[in-house]
Image (cartoon, rainbow, N blue to C red; front, side):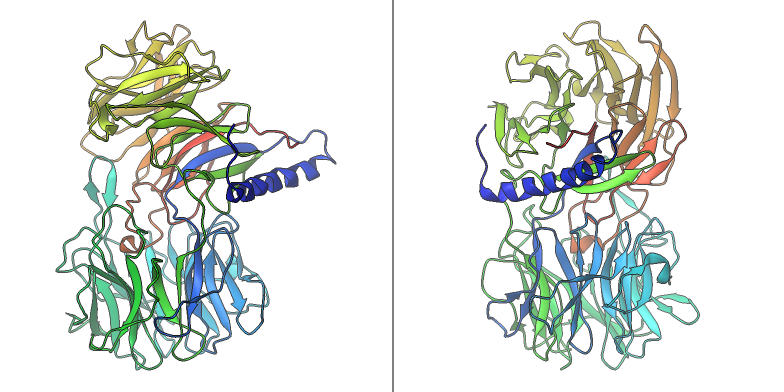
Length: 638
């Protein structure tokens, strides 16, 4: 195999460290079982770090230096503490960094397996507000600020308690109120076949009574409210008057009671987000200079600027480098600004593992190692080796990466028609690979009639199994004995689950009726298939997970529904022993204002479901879309 650059070695060392931690514990217990492996695709950006801008236009100083994501900074009113969010433990946590000490280590503020993010200080510095998902969805909490100790989540107070998502809290100057944005009570619109589009408005909660008042009621997003220093006004961003594509926003201002809402006359920009008041009364915010072209973090697109409260007298705070910076806040000294921006990162096509991974998790009865992979189509773990099958972030290939030792090997690369392969599957003996090309996922002008392909694990004997089918065939999955392949066939809006022999013969249909039945996966240990369907309401864009049990001769015995939520479900897979399912779900809502990260979060977190009793465990808590999981048995450390 070709050896990868040194920055791949860094993430490989992290993999070995996680497995080594298990191996050390196993020395005292010969019955110990290595943790299962789950890989998944993530839309998380590359490395983010916190930067300090000490002088407008000058190069900033980097305050954090960790391969995981660091973002959403806030500085205590006395200028001593930087509170920020970091994903160095595999999910967003709040940390406090003492800015008065050189080379100080950040201190974990809350010990939780859920998300904690978007911290804000009260004016006296004694309390912070933040967004947390410990209750299952994004809520706003308050907590006494005590950076010398790590608090349990039970010490925080949930001040919103609503099934909707609540975001970006901001204390009023007198500490009596919190302004925040929320999608509570708002309809979720369909966007395409499965993606759903959320919107939000500004609310305020009185902390003593818990009374909530809605302050805005406009189409699209109103978000990231901030109080003026005298508490009489609230500045926020809004999509109103700019279209509702979540990619064009402008600053607005209103009285604290929600009256007299109007746009600020700021210099023209494609988008304006995340306003904050500075001590001198100016408003600092991030603005996008270029139209959106498909990349949220396109270099040279986002900068930090400030204006007078009436929108005049623009001052560019960030330097003229090609880096991007977001979500500014007042720095530790007058005239300084903190914000997060892209830090030193790795080439996503060379370093498949997302910076900071892998991460340890657990479900009842077993430990897990989670591998977040920067592949935006999908991946499949090798059943018994430290390999993962995927394609490049930009590419038309199938590649195998060694997650333990480093190195990549390209198995096949396709020419025109330029259909990117997706929907990968290994046979259980790892002798064969199946995948999809074309159809509903056709890109680069490729064929739209979708086919199922297979090849040997070394890339030879490449074969189209459905060349004569005019339908969209895809998402193959091998039965445990390798004799059968399940796949979906049909057209967008009307797919069904089919079976065929591994050589493409003996095709039979397993599902029918109204609705669409998608992306079947075989149990490795039973005559059972999991799939996604809207069969309970064919007019809906919402899909649920179903289980189809087969007879001994591979006919349909039973079909039962596994999930029944008001969110989207997708990307289902079995555990290696067939006892669990893992899938992507929207049931926890979103955890961030959509315009702050305008990638579609259709159904963004991973959940594990135990088939025997319905036990459900949320595996990821973040604000990036996670999907396309693969679950295999653990590997012994060596």
